[in-house]
Length: 307
Image (cartoon, rainbow, N blue to C red; front, side, top):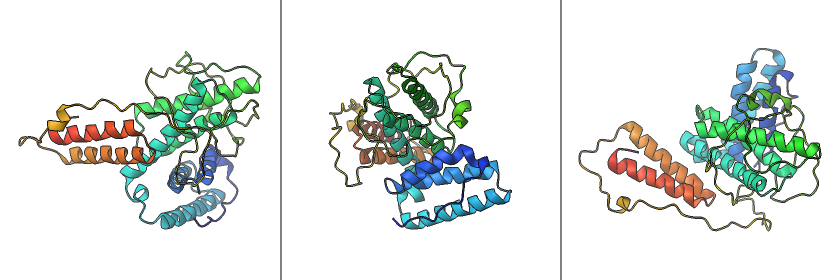
């Protein structure tokens, strides 16, 4: 992919989008679709913050040039031309990165790359808002990932051993309000699935958070490293996928035939299409469980008119 023109210095007003832009740069080669939507999010957010002062207008103009160049390079990529596919792509990518970090956390393997993965997952969930409001699950994952990144970073920085897995905390501390504390750069190297016995503190948003509950079963065991895309051509010898448990399939679906009195609305067809797109995106990451679940939802909706 051709190199993009450099952006001018980031205006101070746009401090809140600097990490989203850095994430875009990190993904220009790893996953250009992710890079595109990170820039789109930064563009939309920047327009809301300040589109009038000269330095902000100049920055947004250059950012728009990058977006147009990326869109031209990506051509007919369905993740760019169809919002449903793009949303599914981002959600799956963010979830895989979250699950990698969560798996490392639950195993007690604390290192800067898992911290980076938690925080980057939270940034990518921010980016999903370009498609509309977040689901409650995504809101919880974003808040939890941002809190975990901060909590583990602070523990390691202070020479303390973090508590693995979800920890009981109070709900009244809002992680979102402390996001702006992450003005300094995160570790600049892309996450690699390896444990480290030493920790070089990068600057994760600081703060003391003690209140998030993630419901049991909210996230499954992870098989996927933070370097999610499989098309990079790089052979990994650090984490091998473990066998996946395929969800039980409703036997009724094998014999279900659409009844003549089932009337499907345009919204029903759109939802069924969404489930199929989600399944296709999940298969790109060899996520059989998610693919099967979404295909079952689509089939049930199309044959019964109900979800």
